[in-house]
Image (cartoon, rainbow, N blue to C red; front, top):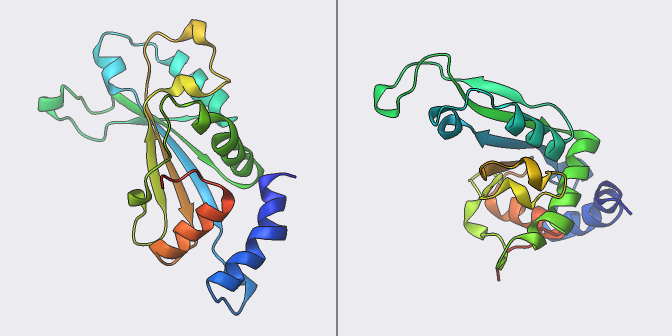
Length: 179
């Protein structure tokens, strides 16, 4: 059974009971997942072609990333206005649930010396942010193409109204939090 079906059939009734929601529409859910990859250091080393990283992020997410450009020049960072600085992908719907299922069951257990992800990364609205140091832990990334490992920041945006509700939602979904 997929994560989306599990959420609808098993997780929603549990959350409704534990969070004491009167209406099923009050139960928190995952709205979107945003993946960000910074490419500023890659550009600064002299590589003008970042299509390899763009391809890797497209394989990881299952859809094409958007290139983000610097809005203004900052001389201390050797940054010029209009320079590409990052790649971003927003996942919703089926793509989001497929990505979360892959992340929880396949990718995070592949991390070296993995002891769980931190509870401390929730914001006040119940959204969760965490980073992965190497994008090569995703099985879709061909190991032959990797020149340099890049980190990926993952943001899980929820409809929860508090840290506790967001934490409960992601725990029920199976996120491997540290004990």
